[in-house]
Length: 121
Image (cartoon, rainbow, N blue to C red; front, top):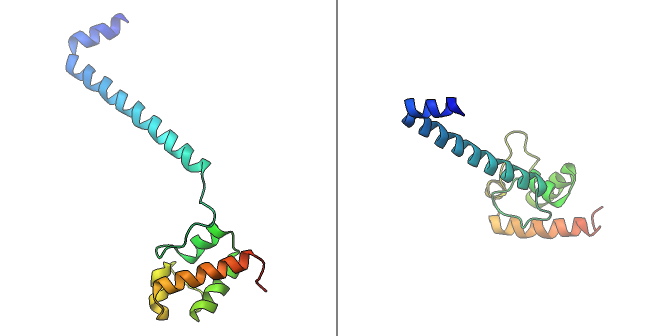
């Protein structure tokens, strides 16, 4: 304790800065820990409403659809083969297929609901 007082008396500004930075590290570390814990406790939501920014793989994860089945559904809706490169969002796929994005989203939602209710082959 005596050593801490000596450091404080010799270098008050440096000690205050150190204590302040240490408090910030503890604060943000605690906050990061809790945010990470919340993230891992609540994984991807089930059956999220489909939006244009989502990729087919993301939708497949959310809706618990096997990826080959998801790509088959997408092929039936767009007449396009499965992507072979960088994942494309649904908006981009709809544009490439010449379909309005909202129409693709509505058709995909209906197809996934049919799939989950057991109407698929």
